[in-house]
Image (tube, rainbow, N blue to C red; front, side, top):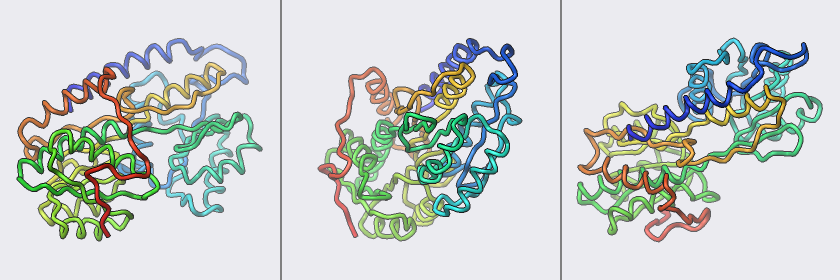
Length: 341
């Protein structure tokens, strides 16, 4: 959805100018944090050059932040890469390596790092820890979360119209866990808004290749997910099945790609850095489509059904102006969803 992405890019640049211009970047004592001496550590479960998963979303935001300028360049950052969040010793070593660099701010890409951060944050009170999926602890841990349901709804519109064009009523969905069906339900609602007869078959679990195989066997002609995995793109391409990505635009060049709901943490990182430079507390962040924290990638016009862009634009405007709102269950499947084994 090019129009909405471009509007957001303009707004982002203006907000950055307004946000950072007020910071006292060059004045202060030797102990003040400025954009000249701020040091930002980044704890990644993947590599610095990742384009997928939470590490990819984190690095996309950091690279976008740096590209706008204002003195926050890559020399302000240090990275601990390929840290297994399920390995407490490795996580502790990664955090300590960034603390040894005397970071003022430490960004943790995965919610699974929270336990390890909690163990070390109390002994490092001067450091601000930003942890995806966490909540503020009232001390020096600050959470950031993104509600991607609005954008998943838009992806559902594209998928539902494609299924209608193919005259097949079955779509498929790969849900990471039955503890959170919110993205699945939002997608299914988007499907139903343009294709009342369509049904969504959902597989729970992260064996992507097996899940795609099950959904294809079940008759799905379009498949989406609430997690990112190269196996989804590969299996759908090999099976000539259309698919929606998730989290990033990594697979946009795949032969059967339609679109993807995408995370954008850039504004939160900007606001957190500004707060620290201004000697203020970073605010807890929970953004969604209307705030630019998520967006729908460009629709693949070669694959999408006719009228997809117009339908998405109309719904997107309604979400942005508040005339379209959602009540989405986290644990109960929407009316057109069936969980399959």
